[in-house]
Amino acid sequence: EIVMTQSPATLSVSPGESATLSCRATQSVSSNLAWYQQKPGQAPRLLIYGASTRATDIPARFSGSGSGTEFTLTISSLQSEDFAVYYCQQYNNWPPRELTFGGGTKVEIK
Amino acid sequence: QVQLVQSGAEVKKPGASVKVSCKASGYAFTGFYIHWVRQAPGQGLEWMGWINPNGGGTNYAQKFQGRVTMTRDTSISTAYMEVSGLNSDDTAVYFCARPRWTCGGDNCYGHWLDPWGQGTLVTVSS
Image (cartoon, rainbow over all chains, first blue to last red; front, side, top):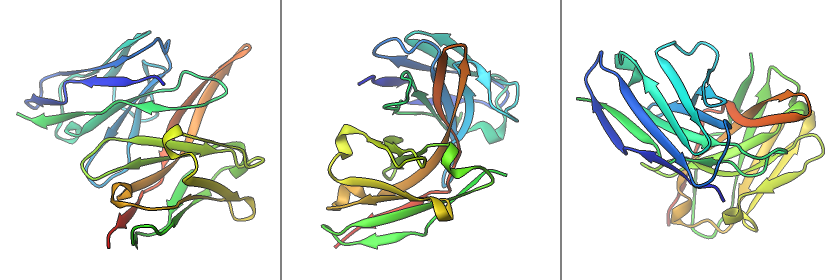
């Protein structure tokens, strides 16, 4: 099983600043990584797939990078609506077998 | 538009079973798997498995094998996820989600999940 580890668990950022979130896999997943945003009481929302491709209607201030075992989600110029929990998810098998999520990073207002 | 609508909240006693539904609309139901993901209170996302509505094939996370059953009714574009032998650790919000993927040449890559259902809270309490 591929284990995904996110860091930090909590990130305190002031509005207008940028945030850098990390996700690490226990073995290479190539670029088969997605990022999601989740706000309290809501379902997760897809932000990024293929490690760096923004999903439909996702603002350009969200960017993803990395490959193999190390990935980064960067949120530039944080807006009030960006304070949420972010999860990474690997999908390294085809046909699809097991998906695994990271433990999440909470981005909170500093 | 593509939409997944789940059944309402449930309260169950330990040892009971619960069956959650996920009704799909806006696309060809048999053309896409349905994944199930759960989230315990204050915790992260935990993948449970998928069902292929075209034929009914399933794949469960090892943790849930023998206790979770995923089925579908193609006539009403609805997927179901049943958990048996409930205990307090099963108290969670259960989500269904439709996957997406991409293919190029001989290779395909996926699944990432979009959209998601609104979630169904299952509370296990005596």
